[in-house]
Length: 225
Ligand SMILES: Cc1cc2nc3c(=O)[nH]c(=O)nc-3n(C[C@H](O)[C@H](O)[C@H](O)COP(=O)(O)O)c2cc1C
Image 1 (tube, rainbow, N blue to C red):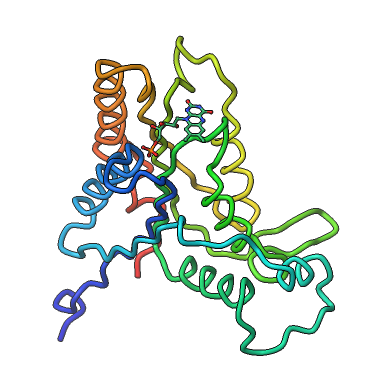
Image 2 (image 1 turned 30 degrees about the vertical axis):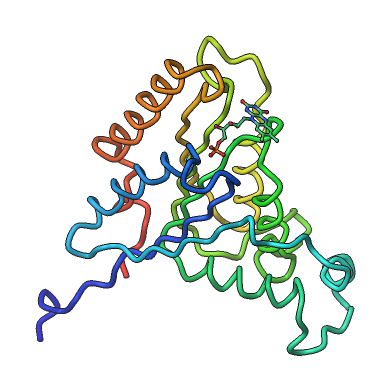
């Protein structure tokens, strides 16, 4: 079998779903547009999607908090709780080619379920190293696409609120080595039907423009398998 005849490995996408709104979630719908675009770019290679509903995560427990605060604490092997869950979440993240995050804005920042995921994957000695020069990420870089829905506005002339979500997410993902983060938004979802429709039109249009014409598409930033 020549290399051109070998089956192509699918593009592995891990999608994090942070909204409590299930199928009605605007950020989930926006992420669906990104998925369509990624599937189209992947072509014959296809995609393999893993969905993780972050609402199923529990807050970190005491053994985990103590282990992160004092790395000399001895961890009993096979221990249940946040440490083993954290290992699983990190393995799952490492196994994907593309990370897709569907999230609402909650109080100018990330919602609690997304913060819980962050607290379990940003782990000293595992996904970043503490060095004299600061924190250095250990993960192989890969593209991260973030679909945000917000009731008000965080861009354009109508923006009247702080946006800690995007700067925070970029900073914390860079801590673990993920430096290519691209944001898409559906804004004004709480401002009535007309605003919602305009917000969708703008957000979905930005996805099409980015994946249709932008040079930062998957092929450019994702190493081939
Ligand atoms: C607890 C909570 C806090 C919120 N905080 C904000 C906010 O700070 N700014 C904003 O524009 N919208 C805020 N919203 C509105 C949501 O961002 C908006 O309804 C969004 O469309 C939800 O997305 P989803 O359907 O994907 O969950 C908040 C909603 C909730 C439930």
